[in-house]
Amino acid sequence: MVDVRIAGKKYWIVQHPDALKYIFSEHPKAFTKHGITKILRYFFGEGLVTSNDEAWAQKRKLVQPSFHKKQLSKSLGIIQNETGAFIKKLNGFPPNSEVNVNQELLALNVAIVFRALFGTSLDHQIDEMLHILQELNQFATKWMRSPIKIPLNWPTASNRKFHQNCRQFDAIIYKVIRERREGKAPKSDDLLSTLMHYKNAESGEGMSDRQLRDEVTTIFMAGHDTTSQTLGWILYELALNPSISQKIRVELNKTQDPRPFTADTLQQFTYTNQVIKEGLRHYPAISAVMRKPKKEVELNDIRIGPSANFLINIYGMHHHPDYWGHPEKFDPERFTIEADKNRPSFVFFPFGGGPRYCIGSGFAMMTMQVVLLELVKNFDFDVPAGFQPEIEPNITLKAKGGIRLMIQKVNFKDAF
Image (tube, rainbow, N blue to C red):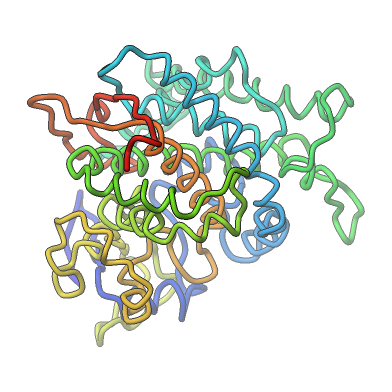
C-alpha cells in the first residue's frame, strides 16, 4: 500500500492480497464506488454497475438469473453462430492480410452481446453502433484523465458531441424496447425479456422504458469491449509464440467431436482455458478500479479516513513478482489445476471479487473460449515487421491504435 497525491487528492494504491480481501470480500459494505462512476452514471443511468448498497443488491438479484448456467447454455448458440459468420468474413480476406484484430473482434463482440441481451441483431446499424461506442469511449477516457472535470451540461463542442452520441445510442436501444412491447419483435428468452416480466412485489408495477434502458445498457457496455480487448492481446501473444497455437490445436484434435460446443465440452479444453486465464492476468481488461471508504477503516495496521480514495491496482497485482515468477512472460502453464489450488486469493482477480464479482464472467469466458478455438482452428497469426503494440490504459487496457496482425488460413487436418 502506497499513499500518493494526484491533483490535490489523496489516494491509497493497493496491491496486497490481504488488503484486497478486506475491501472486496470481508467488508464490501464499508466501501462505495466513485470517481469514473460519475460519468458512467450519466450514460448508464442507475444500472447495476453504477448502483450501490441496497439498490445494487436488488438489481443484482433481478439480473442474476439471466447469467445462470442454463441460460448461458442458450446463449452459446448465438456465440457460435456469430463466430461462424466472423470466420467466414476473415476467410474472405486475401492471404497474409494485415488486420487490426481489435476492430474486427470489437464488431464481433458487439454483435454477440447485442443478440444475447436483446434477442435481435444490429444488421445494418452495426457500423453506426461501433462509431458511437468508439466516440463515447474516447470522451470518457479524456474526461477520466483530465484533472479538471468540465461539467457535462456546459455547451462545449466535446459535450455537445457526447450528448449527440448518447441520443443516437438511446434511439437504437429504445427502438428495440418499443418493438418488444408492441409485439413487433419475436419473443426471445433473453435479458430484456426477463426484465420486462419483472413486477415490483409491493406495487405490482413493471419496469419503465428508462429503467429497462439503464439495465440493458449497463450490461451491454460492460461486456462488449472487455472481451474483445482480451482476445486481441491473446492473439498477439499467439503470433509471438506459435507453439501455443499448436498446443490448442492438439487439444482441439483430441477433444472436439463433430457436434457444436456445449457448456460442458468447453470445460474439457484445459490448456485453452489456461491461455485465456494468462491473457486475463497479463492484460487485465480493467487494469484498476476505485473504492472509497464510507467511514474510517484499518488496513494493514493503517487507519484511513473516509476522505481517502483507494486505487485497486489489478495490473500491478497481476504482475507482482512476489506472487508470479517472471511476471512479464506470457506463460499459460501458470494456470494448471495444481497451481490454481495453491494460489492465494486476490492475487488473480480479473473479474473482481466478493459480492460484486462480475456477473457476466461466465458469458465472457464462454465467448473467449469459442472465438479463440475457432480462430486457432482456422488461422495462423504473425506480427508485421517492426510492429509492437503500445499499452494505453484507458477505461479498458487497450493497444494504442489497435493490434495489427497478419492472418493466414490453415488447413486444420494438415496441422499434425
